[in-house]
Length: 159
Length: 159
Image (cartoon, rainbow over all chains, first blue to last red):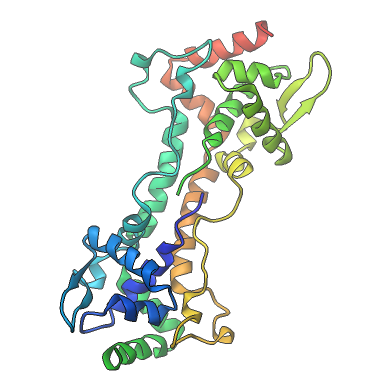
């Protein structure tokens, strides 16, 4: 079970975008995070399709968050990049073999599928409780307010 | 993010093994669940390496659970098959780019990695709360006691 590596880039990008007062070009975000530009551009497109960022055209264009960082959850970002399919997919083993249960008796998901779904739901709930604003606060606390102040300065003065 | 399909087979096999008073040959388990025998044999070996089942040699040999089904969690089985690596792996993006944070200031995991780890922990806790005995009880309840009674009868009389 593995999440796309792009989830990490996307979460960092959203935190960085939350620190900028103006749109940030994809290439600048790539430079800031030390990412190959084409790779990051692809992830920004996925965030855009999910309605988390939007792009503004023009020579002062770039990407913005579409709503406050406190209204974007880690789950929003993770699912924008990695999709919403649960990691466990039931193939109805109970309907196979010599003791197969008839399909008409299988309208309720199998106990095993329900247990796996409950675990996935716990994961979803944990990520839905954390916002991009919370992540920014955490990074600020970890760095005694330095890391994101530097990001804000860099985004405001370069490019 | 996707779990190995074999997780589903392994959970069903453990429930079935919990219903048998004698060792069950791998080929019989494969027949019961409608699985390719070679595929199931591989998963049983993984369960064996994890100490969940053991094999008994001889013409009445086969696989047994190594401990009561109430002492085997869904997490034990899932991790035996799919491994213990968390789905999110931090590549220390904070240490990249023009504002890279020096490694000596990164002894604590990044806020983003901690958030992802907390979600994984919630998933782990959910699966650690459910035992193979609970799954058997659920299947029994779902089928009004029929499904596992049939499994017990089939395992006791065939092969």
